[in-house]
Image 1 (tube, rainbow, N blue to C red):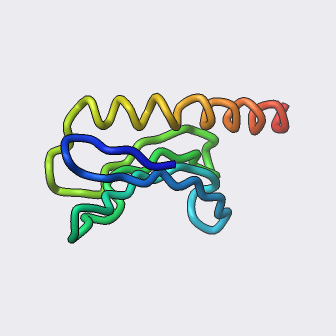
Image 2: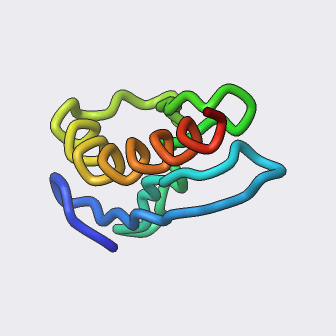
Image 3: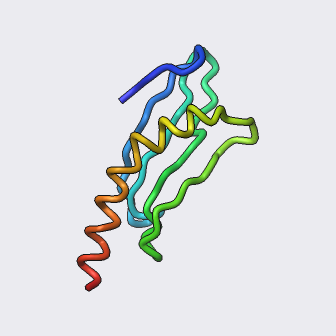
Length: 89
């Protein structure tokens, strides 16, 4: 999935890696060149079962960009959190 915000182009990537955090989404700034790389991660912490958000940049991010990313990733993460909790019950 990709979209544009304020002249920058972003890719949203889903990942699943039990050696990392478990499951998540990352927002990658890819263009115009040079891209800034991954700027946000929303993920399920595999050790606690908690959904978390981490910024991977020292630059400020517009609130609207963060809100849009959470709106895209949030429902998917909530579904995985619910599945994990159901398995633990």
